[in-house]
Image 1: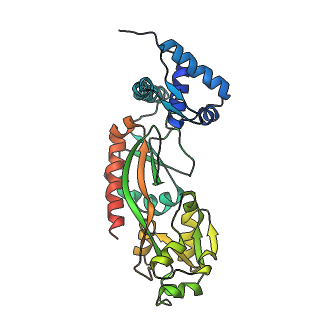
Image 2: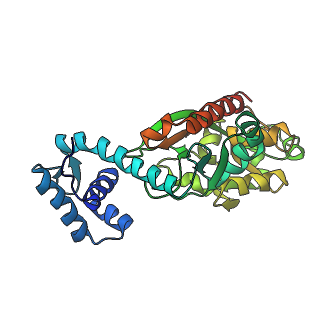
Image 3: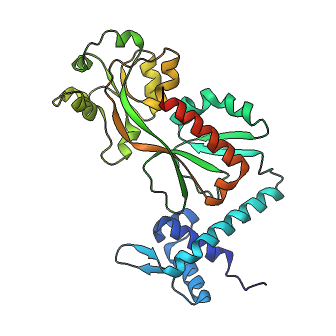
Length: 302
């Protein structure tokens, strides 16, 4: 049975607003003015003869009708994307694109990617390493491997592992330390991307756990925008990083990094996979999910 469907642009506008829960953000993503976007959604509501959003003072929320409509629209847009990819000659079952941060790409995936290639030679794995948020409807990305807290509205989330923070440095520097207070004699390396998390723990939090509550020197040192850059500097002996245990595990196994103290604190964030719910059912994605869970479990036990 065929039904008269609303215009695709209206459905796309509805999905984007529902994902962001913001007309302004959705308009920016779609390259429309807020008034044009509102018109698209109003057209959809008029055709369906029902309200999809409740406009509050400074926010919006989905009505019950909007909540019922959203999953089908998301699935439909995903199917459209796959159909277009097939027309372009892309074998969806063989090409797997994973978006992740540069640190996770260089310190977790790259050193161990040969294992995935050996286990799944039929899958062509492509890693897109950057910190930008992905639009899974418009970008050629299957899954996002993220280190954060979320939430990611409109996306399916599979939590993988928590990480912990502890000082890490070149072995020769670790041999010169006897107690946490000795850190004041070394350059502290700071990774600033953690600051994007509310109340993110840093050197001050770790030192307090180690029994040093007053450490004015904890904010001094060198700052890096990317965790892998700070970690590489630590390997070369530039100073001591408050390293993520999972990210440092490979370099520690190679003897490039050492842990001078046993104190650890939670990073208050998790490694997680995010994406459209349909993507998690694809063979190639299931293969990557099984593989990365196994690798992270091994790294967490290091």
